[in-house]
Image (cartoon, rainbow, N blue to C red):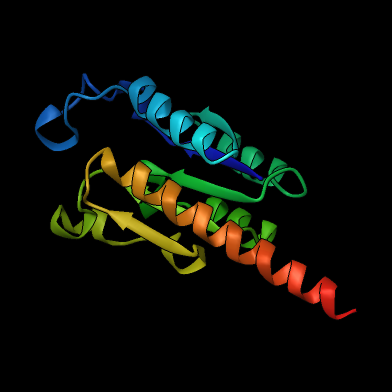
Length: 156
């Protein structure tokens, strides 16, 4: 099983930018924790970060046929990107969106979420721990899909 973690704009600045909102943890630290959870659960994990919308769309499309699930923090593109929304919809993979802050309690423009309707689930407002919750959720989803496929094969 393979999970691709896609990080959007400015997340490479975690630990530096607005620590009162996003905390002191760096993206590399979050990824190290996720890698550990993946290893403990025999899951392959790949990380990607870009500040460019088109590169994020390309990465989502590359997941088709190559990954079993996507964890995405589209960051500011969450509120504006129909292209990212359409890419998630097109690949039809289990996708969990993560937001470090509670976007529903922030500025009005951040409360509009373009990608949530095409995601399997959302984890919002748990800080960096939200990535751990998303990992556990994605592993559960992938195990349920695998069990359903095995049951279907057994019936043939």
